[in-house]
Amino acid sequence: SQLVKYYHQIQMYGKGAENAGLAVENVSLIIIPRDATIERIPQDVTELCFPYNPHVAGEVLARAGRILAWARENPDSLDEIDSDPDCYVCSFQRLR
Image 1 (cartoon, rainbow, N blue to C red):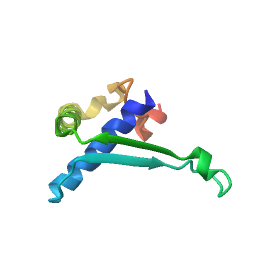
Image 2 (cartoon, rainbow, N blue to C red; image 1 turned 60 degrees about the vertical axis):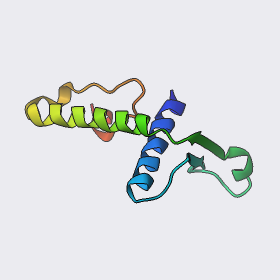
Image 3 (cartoon, rainbow, N blue to C red; image 1 turned 135 degrees about the vertical axis):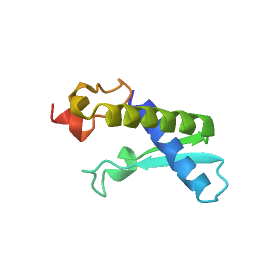
Image 4 (tube, helix red, strand yellow; image 1 turned 180 degrees about the vertical axis):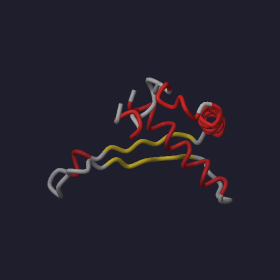
């Protein structure tokens, strides 16, 4: 679901802030539609706020590491990579 994607994304922001030496308790994201106008912004803005979970951030990084390792071992087979149902559609997948 879209919420899961954003959840993982903002957990990574928390990890980045933590790595920069900041104390992180919560992570949040304000979503403003790209085509929003001043009149529409109040009703179209969405705020997501969650407790920071370093375990989730670690899982995201581990998955990215597995994908990178596979890609390095199989450089001629990159078109075989399937997108996880909870993953955003990257440029590579869009071109397929």
